Amino acid sequence: MFLNSRTESKELLKFRSLNARSTLSTKEKKHYLHLEKGYQGEVMFDQLTAKLENDLYILNGLYLEYNNAACQIDSLIISEETIYPFEIKNFEGDYLYELERFYFLPAKEEIKNPLDQLKRSNSLLRPLLKKQGINLPVEGSVTFVNPGFTLYQAPLNEPIISPTQLHQLMKKLNKTSSKLNGRHKKLADQLLAMHLVESPYAWKPIYTYGKLKKGILCPRCYSFMISIGDKKLVCSKCGCEESVDSGVLRSVKEHKLLFPDLKITTIGVHEWCRVVGSTKVVRRILFENFTASGYGRWFYFE
Ligand SMILES: [Zn+2]
Image (cartoon, rainbow, N blue to C red):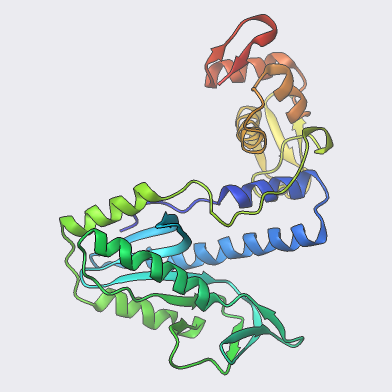
């Protein structure tokens, strides 16, 4: 049973928006594509765990801080007798494991060791469980979900699950006898309550309102949409259609994410969305969906 649904991180949403509205540096672009790919991998993993029928709690995407340590757990499964944190990787291509290090082939470029990331979540979870009086083993693993991934010299003594073992893993999780009780629920609730809104490792890109391209981004391919009359938007790239109301509301959300300190005003949203012909339409949408505050020049929506 999923106790929370996975959503894109604020960091990914910001980068996705900035990628469409500005030119990212090579480093930023690389990081952005890495985030998109990582998220796709997590969604792939969720599609598998969604099919589990056993009595399990599944927590998707946790950012935790405890005892001055921070960690990100991509997926956490609580069974009656074991806690399973998963570090999910959507790596593609050939990799090599050598002397406790991971390399991307053929250039043999060293990458961050995903086992270290797993160790971090294990060492954060153990004292946390202890404090709750829960005496369950933590069995984390680094799980590679992309079928195009190969790890040469994969160590047998490390908790690594390769794409060809995923099926077996799900079978195991489904077969282990598990009967959850109130203590498991309490632990799950506690973890969800501790969950931070933003990853402690999130990159903070630098951008300014004036330099970003204005317009409404397509919800499917993130290209700019054009308006057809007063009510409809169409993506010029993929043909996706949407009502003006829904496009404006999405854009307001994006505006809030990028500029949490800027107030939402009719003029501001009209400029941000660019393709909505009249300010009257924007004003109506804002009135229908937000609470108006202030007077005259200081009139805004929240
Ligand atoms: Zn599109």
